[in-house]
Amino acid sequence: MRLLHWMTALLVFGLFGVGLWMRNLGYYDPLYQVLPYWHKSVGFLLAGLILLRLLNRWFTASPTPLASHRAWEQRLAHLMHWMLYLLLFGLFISGYLVATSDNRPASFFDWFDIPALFTAFENQEDVAGLIHEVCAWSLIGLAGLHALAAFKHHWLDRDQTLRRML
Image (cartoon, rainbow, N blue to C red; front, side, top):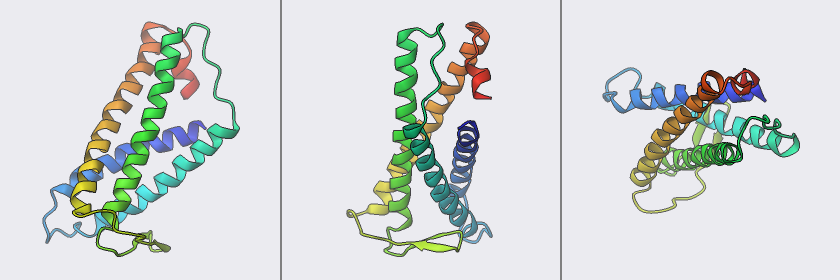
């Protein structure tokens, strides 16, 4: 589970950085076609990893909270984890809608195509793109709070929370 956690973190921050970079590419930039291709493929890969994480979470008990964790901290941590998942799925759905807005399939590393099943609404690319951007920034902000909470447990509370994640 720890490996999936850190792979997810690495991919989320990497995709965020690539997403920011892509927005500033000019049409004649050599990366104009390459970066979106990789962003989509790695995004689909991340979606698969998140599904694996949820399956693992469903069939495997979560680590027992430490006795030093107060009830409000446990509830807040639980809420934060589900908000992270909600934002990730918002990214996956909006990313899919952007990638297939022209009714063409999205390639997954040139291994196979993910079909464009439907056009959901008018101006799909623009609306889904805005949702994608808002979810991405929200996810990065929430992930930052998640990291700060882990550091709080490590440095202020001096408990084992962070060590159990490593």
